[in-house]
Image 1 (tube, rainbow, N blue to C red):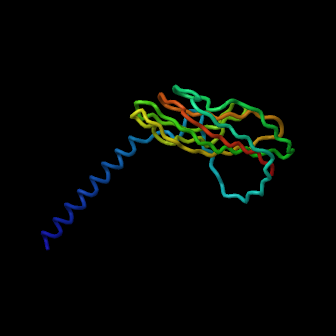
Image 2 (cartoon, rainbow, N blue to C red):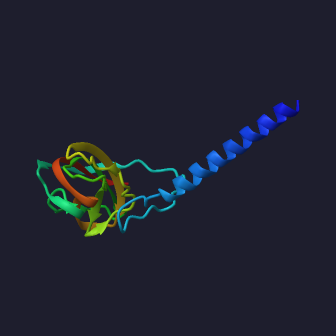
Image 3 (spheres, rainbow, N blue to C red):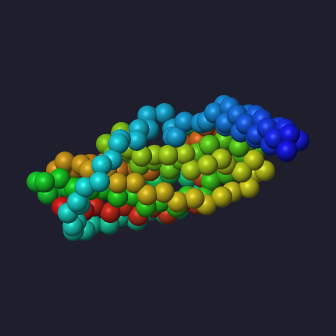
Length: 174
């Protein structure tokens, strides 16, 4: 019986040390959730009213840009919110990025009137073997009435190239 208690205690110590090591190691590997300026407002459950689509815009192309930091994916354009109650802008984006030699992080970010919209998280690391990966992102932002300038950017922590993109912008009124 003594031998069983000794073995159980030894196993408990090994499990505790192993768990503590991996907890500390994981804490040291934490990365920020998104690019500089990205913020993630606390959301509360709410009843959302139905929205009516006002208009949609589509942009697609290839070889948009390369480099680090914020790189434009498509050209900026204007959209008019004619609702006195304001509008909701939605971006659904598919971007093929890569071509680098290090595992830099990247995210797809909507900018409205030159300001990054909330909830622009890192999607993951770029391939480090020079290949490309296709990722998608979706963002929404509420705006007031009037004309707004919209543009999509890819943010990378290092070098990367945009090979192909397709963006769907939707403007809704409440």
